Image 1 (cartoon, rainbow, N blue to C red):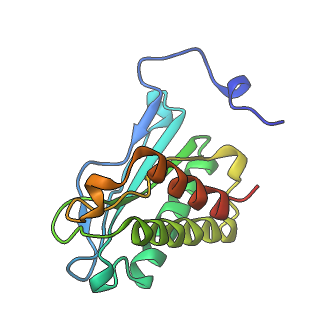
Image 2: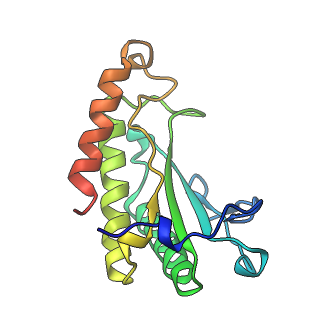
Amino acid sequence: RWSFRPHLPPRTPKSRAAASRRRRPLSRPRWPTSRRGAKGSTARGARFAKWRAVLRVDAARGLPSDAALRHMAAGLATYAAVSQSEGLVPIVEPELLADGDGAAQSLAEAERASRRALAALFAELAAQGVALEGTLLKPSMAIPGAGSPERASAGADAVAEATLRVLTQTVPP
């Protein structure tokens, strides 16, 4: 069984590189933003590189759109492939917003959006030849939106069960 531990150096003060904090909007309003960066990370002693792609969930407006999902997946997979080619372990984070303007998705809608996002991501990771055993996923929980009436009533068990269903149905073995 493959493990990260033998490949890691002793703990260092700076062992992770994050993409730049500057968000760049895509070509259309209300599409996700992207972050770029982490150049020279290995020279600074980094062993991990993280890229977070933010997607808005709004079932009434059809968000996230198929185009936004494709863009998110392509960006994260490309970043993961480049990170691995530079000797870094990529951490990919497709984040689905559960709060903010218009975040009224139900638990079922959040679960569906999470499933679509992870399915798109893993398909693109495979298409770009990213070694999954050398990649870390930082998933979002499937959680009702802040404006949803279910937000107060959805218990931790329901959120955990929905999130585990998404992960078991989308993450390759």
